[in-house]
Length: 361
Image 1 (cartoon, rainbow, N blue to C red):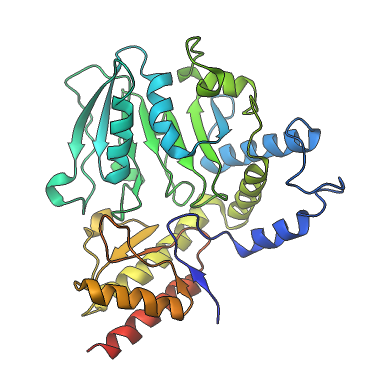
Image 2: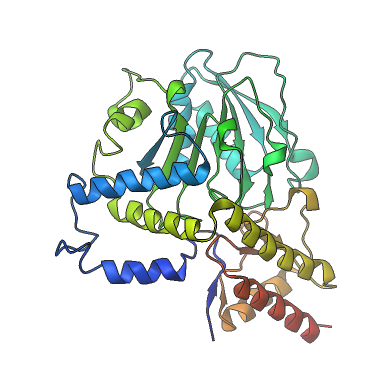
């Protein structure tokens, strides 16, 4: 029986990518070295770095003359602090949209930067985070930027591209859990950051994509904290996560083979519709998320009985449907169906949902 991993992250990688990794591990491109051993100063890695960066910008539809990409460590969580340190320099005040737990964490950490003011300009608190709040376009204060979280991994809500307005204010987005999982007009954003362990690579890599004319050197910051310094050093001020960048490069080529983001989004929409339709048809299971805000990546659902939820998670694991336990903040179940999850995996979950329901009538 095939095993399907519904973990929120680290998540599945495409089977084709796993096969290529297996082939490259003992000898990368005839070098006699494992891909995990090559130097970040070597031509082998520099070629890999440049190709990976070029493929990412191509997939995102961004001009490499205007945008740059950093491959960093420290997780998206570190960017909660680094973005305001680097970019909130004029007014020392930022606006945030509270769409869920990680948006709140971003606001809290930004507020710990000395001299920084953080204003919540929209919140989903009034609907218990079952729908994303409208992103404001007018502001009562001068802000250095507006921060949003495009996909809320825990709550299972997300902004579609049409819900993201073009602003006069710089726009920053944490895209960790739907990065390269659906189409956006990425030119709306001045800076995007994402942990790679959902849709792109193993844990240990963080991607930062930014407009070159918005990021400037900050002499009062250590080099590792300064975006401009890292960009000048091609993300190799210290040893970068070479293996993770290599895997990201393979995944980007896999995305291109699927028709780019247009093809990937179509596949993800089909998977999500299959699962949401299954939950809609169920008398036992339910999704509490507003249909207009439903994530394509993370689908929380419940029975309404905590003990029954636990029984379902345990029984699902016995059927090779793994990591369906919901986040501790919301309970229930959560199926994360990122890019690498095949439609067959979602269908297997739907079949088991029906089987479990039949047994508990």
